[in-house]
Image (cartoon, rainbow, N blue to C red; front, side, top):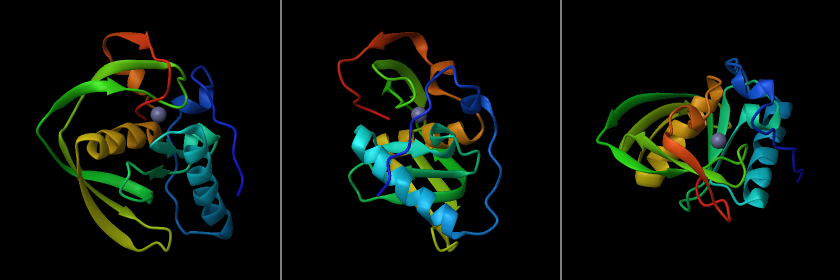
Length: 157
Ligand code: ZN
């Protein structure tokens, strides 16, 4: 178990697009485990490669339905709409209102490079949109309606 340092807003690596992963090497496997450990330790529900300084298309999410590792994820379907507070481990102590689809269907590869499809609603849908945005170098704060506000604790990721 290894906790990696979380990059914070202002770090240029958070604004850069990530490269696809061609094969799951032992290094990628270790990265995925470290990302989960880092996310749990920080109390978040999602974490993307750039947030630990790695410009590869990998993200982890756990909204309470068990951990998911997404490699080269692609959102293939969305429907509905939700507006709610969102936060990010790279923007600690802040939250802001973001509009997201209510339902998201994603196609990705798992840690064994096996393709899978997963569908999620509400927080899970929001987390997928948020994390996959990171892989294109985007932060939720670009999408906030109104202004960021302070929060006492990280609630959402
Ligand atoms: Zn984030």
